[in-house]
Length: 310
Image (cartoon, rainbow, N blue to C red; front, side, top):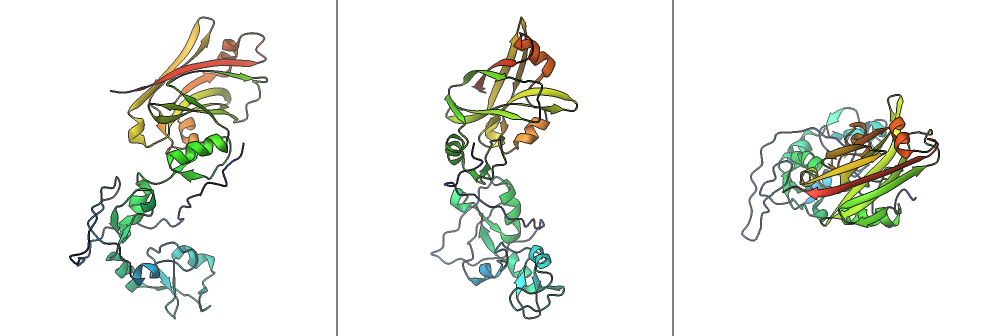
């Protein structure tokens, strides 16, 4: 299975963390032909404003990493600026003129940034909110339009995108099974169940109620005990995930284990969901009992369904 698709564009996140600032909006004079945009963002409070399209915005781009700069913004004796992250990387030497940087802050540029109003970096994905410069990072950390990370857990896949893009990526690049319907009946077989090395076994995607759900089933060590676990993740935000519920069941020989819960959003990583034990957990001894026979082969049938809460 390929860890990622070359046909898909990866969306790179900035490594700059920035600080949270409480700043007052500078008054902006808008002419009669301007049309301000009111924010309706889910995180941070966007306001009426215009995106500054003059050279000031370009001055705030670090010449080394090209990310926007946030305090402390450093400058050399000749006035060339760069961000604090890159200052350490260039060994205190200005990358433009090669002068020693020292510890000069560009306070004027930091102050000018307070008056700017800028769009969310995910504008091309549907977010049309405009924010004060120092509120932008905080909003983007929770913007509902920010890209999702590939939910495939069998490899370290770095592909990100919207849900339709990831569905195609899972099918074409990871060869994930796709099913239509809100009920499932899967049989999992492993020839040597005593080999448990945090192995991810299977991911299946279900198209149900016009949305996509990821069914995970895997083996891993829970403390010293090997266990099997099945859980469901929703391909969308947490608030949307809460509109659905699901149940899982496994058993044999007159005994069964059941689980009912709310699917977790793929905003939560696969490992986070697994480590929180938010799903159907089957101890190995019980799994082998359900399998029957000489206990040398794992044969588990997991059934379940997804429904929408009224």
